[in-house]
Length: 405
Image (cartoon, rainbow, N blue to C red; front, side, top):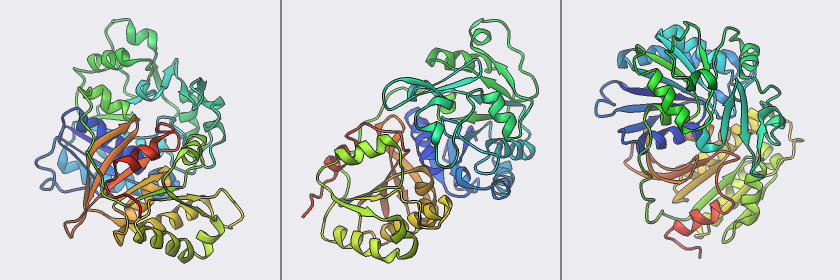
């Protein structure tokens, strides 16, 4: 297999699926490792996990199982797909733990960490990570208005070498921008290497430098890894229409998502109290189901109240269960989920056979299609908190062919 990606959440998995599909690779996404027979007609495939929200022991077990299952596929490139902001902690979603377990199981000849994704406004300079905010300004990641206060994995260190050392990967080398652009012969050390990236020319330079490196290769980073290995030629057209009604569920507390909610029109808006979802999930379920059954497009927003007594992972699972029940009943023709943890858990709870790519709404926001054992299909759009234009929700609603009653 030419390329296998293991994603730490479903939102990121759908973005890499889109990137590879737009590059012309026959690609499909799974929730568990497929057999070689299932993917014999593909160039690449992905496995979407919930590793981003997993504690360390569970994460290690998941990655160990995946590494063992990937051996018969003999992948040339293994891509551990993580968020472009690299937010991670020693206890939750530990990237270093995932890296180490995959490396132990698959024995890569080269391990590369790609520190930026210019197409999303993420840049790595001399090992330090920067990200463009909703205000259009580029911030050092530990001073980013959202990431410095992330509710689960706040970023307090911009130097990714220091960040990875805290996570459990102390021996990280650096290929900085000056060395990358020098044109001098490149000899990578045996230990993992962090690579600076400022623009697309740096991605091409890195690809050229690694052209003769032996396989298998373990790459760690956002979808810029796929962009580097297989540059995208052109964006395919969007589907003309999507089935309705449309259900949008917002679990993200990102300021960008909040602006998208405020801007949205043409929806029956449902405010879901966190306490109700925690202790009486049947109440929001009945309310949303009734609105969808009446043909309304629904925008359901979970409030940020923390007095419900559940840990963030518990609330994400409650949200996932609610969504999975609604999606299983097929009362919604198209579903958009804003929030990485919620989307990952919801898709895993719903358990489709596979997922493929159908179109690109905006950078980082893809339209996918879930396939089920009964032959039915469901368009799904997964959106990270900071992704998408301000009018994203209205753009999706305009594509839905069934108008609200």
